Image (cartoon, rainbow, N blue to C red; front, side, top):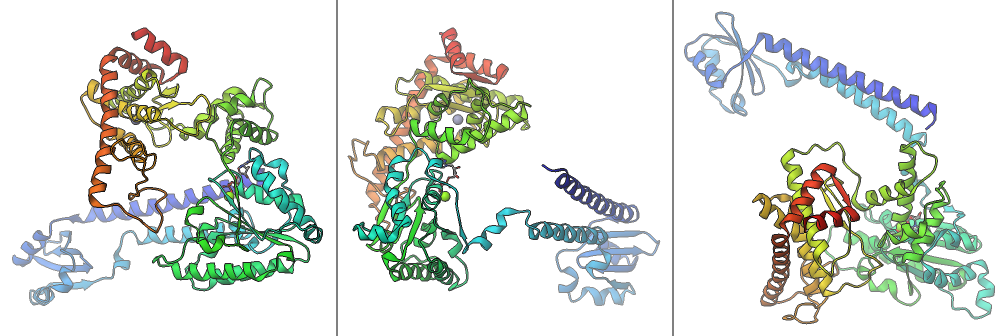
Length: 598
Ligand code: ADP
Ligand code: MG
Ligand code: ZN
């Protein structure tokens, strides 16, 4: 951070602090002043004084009434809502009794008005300053709209994308075409018009699209599906029109990239508010794609992680008729991705990226990039120039579980609850043969969780056995069971566990066909993530059976956990007590604790 930026920021902070102090001070002062003079009394007091005709003067300020007695005492009271204005007899009655009535507006009486004014002015000032900073280009996030229709030249190449070799192989052809559209056509290559990159978030779809432009050295026109979804009718369609017009202006070949295609490309016929607008936009996109000849040198690339909800019209020949899957990287791919991102930081020679890759199954490319970044930050925070194994360990835990929240204060009882709860998970996980090995147990709060029990699979897993899933449910139940057996309590802390266990059971029954009673059929139930707008439902009686099967699986898991914990009380207790002292246990310490209690 440059010195200049820093001093600006401190000026800003100082200004904010001064404003706040002045405002609070004035509010406090006004309060103190009025409090010293006027006591607030119940409304019935006012009525009593009126009855005894001892009221001399009333100042009405909305429902806030200040009244002065004949003896000079002043009180304040709050009338029932709209009492003065809705009670037609009130004011005439006061007048009849000879009470002087003064009506004030809220603003000229409010003791807070001065403070509010200062605060208001202060905020206007701060807003102005912020706007100045934005317009002077200091906040990059807001620039993207302006860039929307402009073409970028990109320096990203295939060398920057790893772990998606098949996808790269498939798009090589597009690069060949874009380099020399004429020659490609002459040798009879089938020219792609639209290519759809499909895959989970963070796997490098956007990066791959950029690298195609970089490899072919052609302009890259970026747009995001969400840019086209506006509240105003016709805006999305006209943006699409402009995008293609810009593309046609490029004499040679170019790429139009539409990120998050699903934002515009959802199947039509929904009933949502913006659906008419979206339909217009989608139609315009279809018209534009049909409107250019394949040899014009324009290739439209789009990305989505929800191909299932796309309008089928988008996938017809001549549109996005080529799909390329960009999947999550395997262990070798992860190592390569780590190498790419590790080039930007200085890494200790002892760090083995293959080992890091092995310990990060399921990580996407974006998460791996984030991991390297976090590791570098840990090194900086420790005052080191070089990133070590320990930094990678910490970074992985952080990316996996959210940042440690050291500041969160837990009561002693909460810590104990947490320690028994996590020990319950851990002991069940350690003793079930089909579970993944334990990696770590901790009662240091992270993200939203108070404690965490972490398992790590030994290799990449693509499929799960029934035994594995059943073990997973039992492990999730272990937390609740330990609380019940040791502390005789149920807490809301198990809520997330219960939700996850139920979800596993639901998928076993509805998606994986693992219920003996219901057989290998897919059941579409509400909440099923791949349920489409078509919404094929199941009958009421079928739904009841599905529910019964799900409940059976969860209850089985609960029973398994209960038996294991009841049989191994000593191990759970020993682990909980150890956790209360050291807060987190790694795989070896977990084994040692369990062995010592046996
Ligand atoms: P997606 O578009 O699939 O959500 P992105 O392309 O936006 O993913 O990925 C975000 C960032 O994560 C990239 O800019 C890059 O730094 C990193 N990344 C993701 N996938 C890969 C990959 N396969 N190889 C190298 N880096 C990757
Ligand atoms: Mg993306
Ligand atoms: Zn839990």
